Image 1 (cartoon, rainbow, N blue to C red):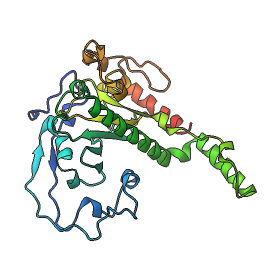
Image 2: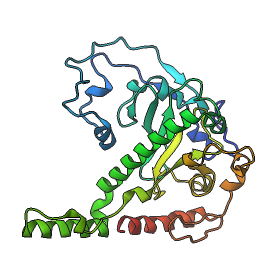
Image 3: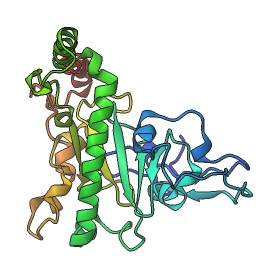
Image 4: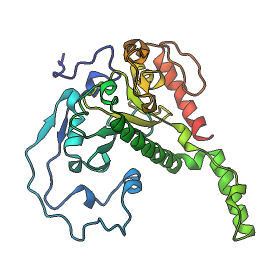
Length: 297
């Protein structure tokens, strides 16, 4: 039987498995190629990119750099690779970054869209969320960034699933009818369409499985091949996930203490509330149908 490497052993309080607590190696640079020069860019990166007329764009491609020695962030420190060298990763992994934050697609997404916001402040990123978010200025910066990402995820949900939504079709049909009758019309008279922002959740796990501070921003569907265990589901369906707007937590807040018990709670469908006890396979099958009905709302 294979043994797990140090830092890859999961505990009852972890929301992920030992397999998911894996290290990350910073990819070597390829001379003449950088992330900004990739021809294929995902939808998130396009939404976050500056406009083509931005004065900050380079007039000439950056000079090639010699590839650095490989650096690996092992086990629970795996997220450190992204904050250390975000420019080394493709846009399929690193969506955006600046001096303060890096946003990535979760390597093991638990919903159809699952982002991680990674603060880059060295004095904060290895602290527990309870301690790091006691700083009002730092907390405020994270809350503002999360708001931006929630809007971004909502737009991506609309792009991916809008064609299935009854409410979206109602608005589109009404708009087409109005345009066929007149060139000018009051959009406020149209059906409002679907508010995709209501389908986005975000927060921090009370017992993070990875060492570096990270905030989850994801669609609420829990539809993913990586959603494989009871702990996976309950880490986003219970108070194990704490909204950033709830911080800072007081010393007496129960969320500081109750951890593993939440992961062992009964499994309840996020959409209809049906209780599946500890029958994860049955919940997983049920969620397939809920996902189709959710898309069609």
